[in-house]
Image (cartoon, rainbow, N blue to C red; front, side, top):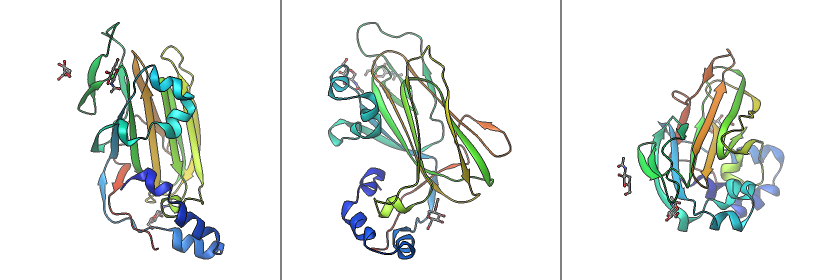
Length: 226
Ligand SMILES: *[C@@H]1O[C@H](CO)[C@@H](O)[C@H](O)[C@H]1NC(C)=O
Ligand SMILES: *[C@@H]1O[C@H](CO)[C@@H](O)[C@H](O)[C@H]1NC(C)=O
Ligand SMILES: *[C@@H]1O[C@H](CO)[C@@H](O)[C@H](O)[C@H]1NC(C)=O
């Protein structure tokens, strides 16, 4: 499944606009099938400074990164989305390193982690972006409707665009129910040199998690009713 292509199913979205609120929830709720553990990671190029000239960092991390002609590879089963590539940066040219087992130019790349967050406890979950270079975006959907009907979206968006010596934390709390799969996406990009991402969440009991082990799932068999 391509998370983004489902989000942008415009014809289905238009159809949903014409039906009542009650039937919207029925038609727009997908069946998910059986999940695999972890997020689905998609890696994309970042050619610096070319991509930076095309638009703002915010536009890039929100939509512009996701282009077939810039796609590198994909992987399943990712629960650790954090990395710290600060040392041994090559001054003139790409620096290679390992991200989720993939040898990539850590100095310039983009990664999208998509899937569902399945809480184990009911209550407020606080999602945080700490140190990041160049940027991190987290999107959490409080329903599945956007997967089948693009127009209905209850979304929480947290974005942090900064460089490594700024440790300003961006965070938001969301009330979530145990066992319910919430669609979620984390996008990271690095233009040049240092690559750092620091994402965590605090569960309703107050425990901080710096990876998504036991929480991230990916459903390969999402089916919409129309
Ligand atoms: C990184 O930048 C170099 C040019 O400096 C380019 O050749 C390479 O394709 C880029 N890699 C990625 C993953 O963007
Ligand atoms: C990663 O790829 C680069 C370029 O092909 C290579 O020079 C480097 O040795 C590789 N690193 C690892 C750990 O395999
Ligand atoms: C997403 O869809 C599944 C299957 O219909 C459902 O069990 C789950 O509650 C939905 N998640 C949300 C956040 O509404």
